Length: 463
Ligand code: BG6
Image: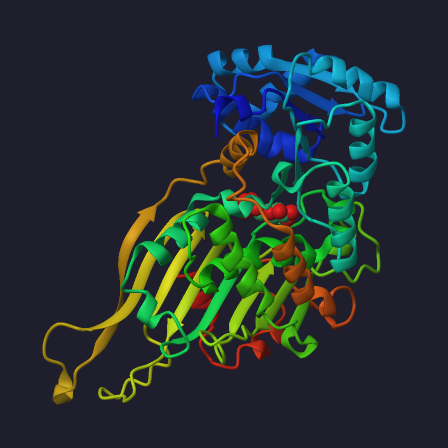
């Protein structure tokens, strides 16, 4: 990729929004700090504001994230511009065009609700802002298969595929990348990474907090659309995919898409949806809302490698703790020589957040002589990696990649469509909703889904 191909302006739609405040500005500051972003940054939003108001918001955001340092902020502030846009008025897009100045290859980053994508892209095209430009869009990519396909049609009517970057920020996370690396940089894993030795795979994304004032958004989403269809199925694809045949980005994306296509659509019998008590009192939430804030599903991957191995995926808001973790449980030894009756003693554990852990769980004998002269064991973990640092900023990596035109860490349309096919049959009210108290691991009914007896909350929460 030559320097000429780098985006020479970043146009941030949704500059006054929540995502920009919480994630994007700290990421831009980190890029400026390491000298990786020196192009004009044009904040775009509906409000009539001055660029100074935007600078104040950036400062607040950096302070809020604990990422404020004066020299970086001042450099970033000098790069900022602001354009107030009326999405229906073509003249405001012309003003945007003027404010990108000499830029030949801007990146338009649409951190805005999906229902505004079509008008925004039409406005950009009308003002001549799309020639040689790139576009980055945020998940959710549609609300179901049909709308995802329609969104793709809208994007392709203006941009070629190489200029489209679909952000699933989980793919920019360090621990998620490490999962891919760990799988394919080691030879010992492959012989056991299949139905012969793996008993079950469990992916849990738990959040201690609720919807944090995002009622309007969340009412349109729910846990399945918000994180399961995208972040968690992407993690599952990395766990379940075959080794890529090439080293180029498309080879990895090909294998991920291939395994996603092999996941069977979720059977409504294998879903438990929950809603935390108090959700209906949140601002923006309908009093009788049946939107789920918790979902637990069992999935099957119909391939030679995984036939018969259940993949359990679950996520919830208002859980006892915030953590994302993968447990790959191995089958028990063929005979129980020591009479300990432990269902699945060995496992791989990947903590994907807030800290990073890669561990192998196993049993060892307790030292010494025990009564009756039987051998007594205890569980232990070999930790290959442990890093308590909170997440490096995925947006720093992703926006940098999009500006360089590198698609590796972005979702591809065929994968997204496969992900919608997996969840489509259980969206909305197809399955019953159960209630749970905040601070618990979800509705009691969720335990029904775990037929292998390998998932008790203590192991889910991690040792
Ligand atoms: C977002 C969801 O995509 O991911 C949120 O909309 C969720 O509901 C968030 O809280 C979790 O991401 P992270 O990086 O904070 O774990």
